Image (cartoon, rainbow, N blue to C red):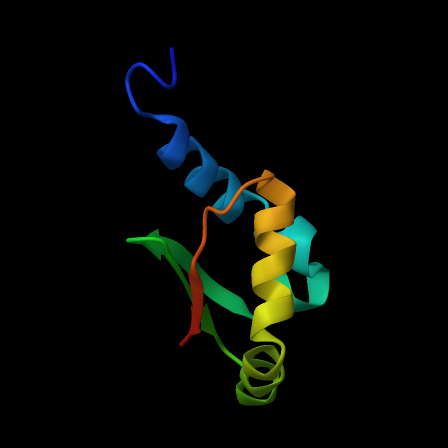
Length: 81
C-alpha cells in the first residue's frame, strides 16, 4: 500500500527525523534545535559552533549512519546550519 500511494519515501524521511537522537546520541540531540528534510537533503540546525564543526568534519560518517538506520539511501547530503 505504501508503494502504491508512493508514501515510502516520506515515511523513511519521517523515520530519519524522529530517530535523530537515537542515531547521534543524547549529547548531540541536546544541542540540536531543528531537523528537517527537503529534496533528499537533511538540514540540521545546531546551537553549538564547535559541535557543528565536528559534525561537518564527520559528514560522510553521519550520512552513512543515517542511511544505515533506514536501510536504504534516503538522504543524499547533510547540511549543518
